[in-house]
Image (cartoon, rainbow, N blue to C red; front, side):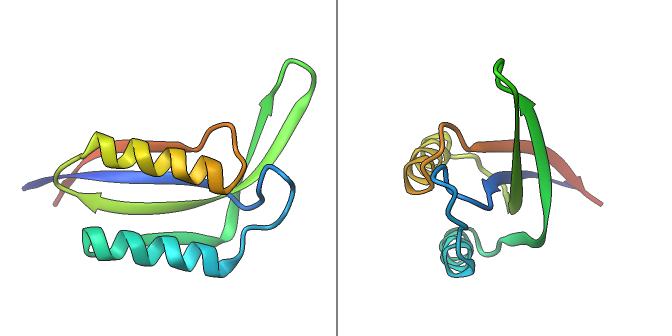
Length: 104
């Protein structure tokens, strides 16, 4: 059995300014990740829906999920990517999470 890591990036479908994130933007991100890791998967057609309590009311967000499988986790790379995406998309936080997986 091979142990791998699944990295998931939860990307909002709209910027913090309310503008839709373009398909070409997602395409560029997928290409960047594919070039670096040999492959990436984007779940873009049916967005997930997030809802959270801000303390002043409920907020709602549609998200796409981008996944990458990798053996090694370069924390610095992922932290830098998160900061860049937050800036590009005018977001307070972009969630990037890692799960260890066992390929059967």
